[in-house]
Length: 297
Image 1 (cartoon, rainbow, N blue to C red):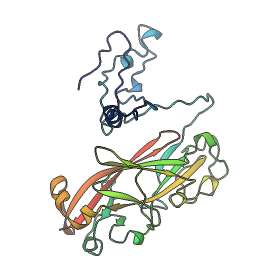
Image 2: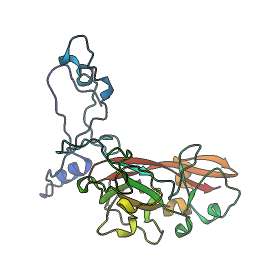
Image 3: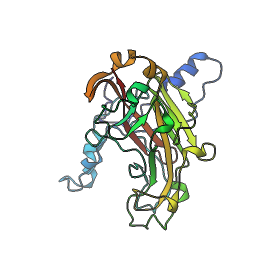
Image 4: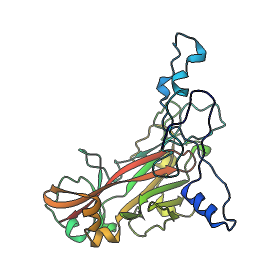
């Protein structure tokens, strides 16, 4: 890994993803470049200085000279901030995806982590404390409420969300959820059915592609009909889901001892911290939700 030379010419550094490299190596014609993504992870736009002493040509000099890493193929380490092209020029605000803890599960107020209790002994131990709301990984359907993510505009400057609907070309009708497949899987908001991953990559990250047209049980109220909303402006769709523990976490302590830690939450427990990533397919907006899997020792 190294930095690109940004002292002179503009350099476009592109690499194949792990999947692209795999298909290229097969040599069976399955390799075809169909999509690409651009990112600006290293750029701090606050460095734009319109008061630069040397004039307007130097306003962005610190930005264009920012150290930028060479492109690399690991999808878990690069392109954290993807760029999106929007042809409209009349947009004052862009929608966000917000974790709605008013109608959904809330994270621990101390560490902002949502807890998943992975087995019967853990879920039924009343001495375990300090978790806040939790997902009942033993009986997923007994979890008091789902994880709720609302999409829309926070500001009401362009209209109140109770009466103004988000523009169709900004509304998310498909979401991607990514989770470490070794630790957990995705269920609908009622805990009735488990989702099937669209694919699992070489890093064991499972991606679930959920569409409102085909996965209706993962979507809640939308637009002006949203209740308990955390968005003041126009609203899009609501995503509802749960995270359940994997069989390995439920039945074994191996991953906890190899990748996790121990703690005392009223009782002695093992714990593993990870994140669940929710991405809107239309706008590319992304939220990382911290998750902690807990197992009683």
